[in-house]
Length: 141
Image 1 (tube, one colour):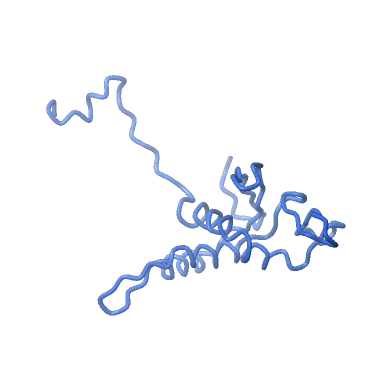
Image 2 (cartoon, rainbow, N blue to C red):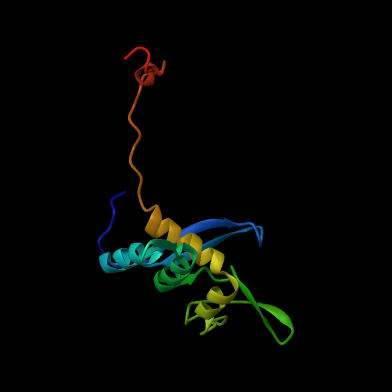
C-alpha cells in the first residue's frame, strides 16, 4: 500500500487497558509545520537547562490532529445512565463537545496518538544478516 498525499482520514486501532476493549481513533496527517512545532515544543532550552515537555506537547498535538472516534467506543453519563458518544455530527449519539472530554478524561489516548504519528511514523528496516549471525561478530571481523 502506498502512502497517500491526499487529505484522507487515518485510523489508529489500539487496545485500551482501562476499558478492556479495542478503540478506534480517527486523525488527519499533520502538516510539516506541525511536525516541526511538535519537535520544537517537546524539548526546549532555557539558558543552561533542557526542559522536556513531551506529555504536554503530545496532548496538545494529539488533540490538534484527532478528528474523531468510532461510534460507541466511548460513553458519557446522561440523565444518570451511560450513553454512547459519537464524534460524527450525523449520528444520533453526537456529542458536540467530545474533544474537551478527551483532554480532560483520555489524555493518555491523545499522548499515544501523538507518539504514534509524530514520534514513530516510520522506522528503518534492519539490515539482513545470515542465519548464523556471524556478520555482527566483532572477533571474526
